[in-house]
Image: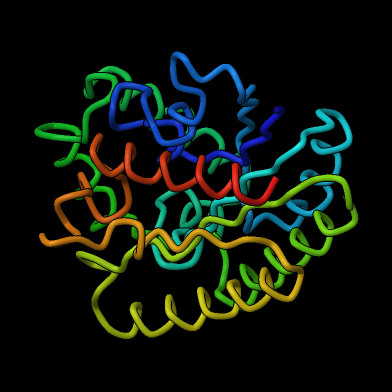
Length: 238
């Protein structure tokens, strides 16, 4: 079975040594799933066109589409620079940021020490802005879901509702996250796309924070739980 994953840093395991829930979909001894992972930013205006093109290219049996709220709830220095100085300056900064990150952070680990200090300093001196507004993120996700619905022979699994913890639990961020995720869930349901509610998957006897390394990225145990839930959804729906 061919799986096309619209991936992000969490699914790819950016902070867990490259082992994320996306990579765990095809575990050793599980030859049923052939997973192709492509980087995807659902808040981009070209997201719908890109998604349709990838499905046509890959001809998957199943598309797995994780949807979070980071595009409008998390501030990025690069988008602040882009608004102030233009795209070229933002691209230059992003290259420098990636180089600095590679030289000050061990692969598969959360930022610490010098890396974290530099990030904090830049945010305080330059500032940070989200990539898009909530309205723009909602419109782009809606367009992407509409584009995916045209592929009648492809099952689309939507994974949504990353828990609001840490800074994401503060108001008004928590309120806007809930509004967005409720809208996304309703749109997916209208298309009859199965929805995996990540918050329900991680609900257990202990605090949900135990499954996260920070406000966004899952821990190894969180990745394993979510991968199992996605595999079950695929087996049930495809």
